[in-house]
Length: 387
Image (cartoon, rainbow, N blue to C red):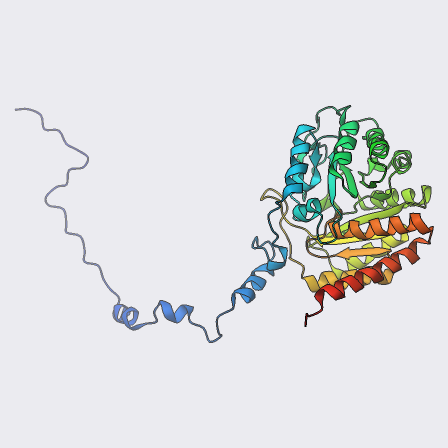
């Protein structure tokens, strides 16, 4: 007879039957008569309003939900489109786009004061450093400098009809002079083609080499800016290892000492884990370094690859720091959730200081007080209820 093939899945007919499932006495009855889903979600407190829920979510560290005071309109308008078109044609970059600034529409469009501004990023769109808050591309070997860039920038600014421009740049640690000569050349080209333009330079630290700071300070700019970014205790967590607190303070102090007529400026991000005591000390250190203008703004995470937001600082806290800045003797302090180092309203204020100082030869602090009084009067008039 043919051999019988045994299969692994065959079951002998004489296998014992599966034992019955035992149910613990009374368990099924308790589940049947126990609390339902509604008992778990129903609380004794009334439900939160949408505004309360948003504020509660914003108070959770690392929560990605934006509070209402950080929401802005998408930048549109004829001036925005015109500037974008010119940027593409001349192969120029702005930090407004690269860093995804929330104030781009207001700045490029002129805002409520009609002072149109832009922040041009020179020396390419790729940085040699990798700060944890910044969305600009990074590389150890970025592309070579564009020799035509200074002239292209000057031509574009002359055509746009701006009032105030901020020149900033990526860090170029791959260059012998870290880009100082290119920076100065760009400022001189702007002065030749658009002499009426007020120029702020938001510079890198040039690895602390002070002769390079002098080279930029002497190029014809109106405002020398360099950002300390955060408090001293968080420098290594927030910034690239080649940047540090004392080096940034040295750059700012030397620029002011070398050319006392320059306005000097720096910026601090809040919401990265700093304490109030650390912010106060940073403001004091900036004043001790001779810094005239300070801005404080909320850190906003560009992408999920960047460091998380520790907290969303309230507008009331920002208002507090603005008052502290004024009490410490800064010529101007701008503090708010959407304030950035090249913030539009700050540039309006600074431009007024520069104009009046040039016209009347007044002391800087007297001019600042006069402009501040005019600005408060304008703001009160705008907020006053209409009859």
